[in-house]
Structure formats: structure tokens, C-alpha cells
Length: 83
Image (cartoon, rainbow, N blue to C red):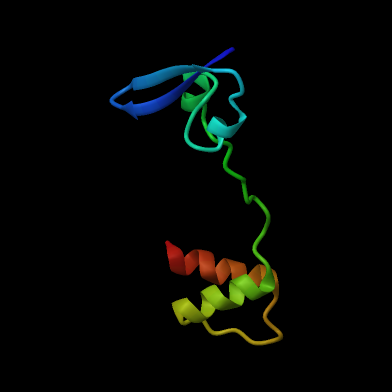
């Protein structure tokens, strides 16, 4: 038998006891209150922007560039425009 918990607001939880919690876990129930309060790991995007992403942002900001503009220079222009 398993105790499972469902948040009902203001740090209050409904608790029930079930034989198999599997069907409940996909419907807003948790194995513990701590599971509910655990932070969700958000993916980190620390990668440098791609050329395409920089060109889109440059167009949005009205920054001039062409095929000879290096990625480094384009990123510098975008960074400066965002200050």
C-alpha cells in the first residue's frame, strides 16, 4: 500500500492510500509532498548563439551585417545594441 498526495492549494494536500500508484502519478498525484515541492530542472542553454539566431536578432534590432561580417563582430553589435 502506498500513500500518495495531491496539492489542493495553500500548502494543503489530499492524501489517499492505494495499492498501485502508477495511474495516479500521471494525474497530479505525488509519492510525497517533497516530490511535489522539488524544483524542476530546467534545461540550460549556455551554448553560443548560432549564426542564424544572430541574423534574426540583428534583423529585429535593425543592425547592418553581410556575409563578410564575422560571427564575433555580429555578436558584439547585438550585445551593444541590447545595452
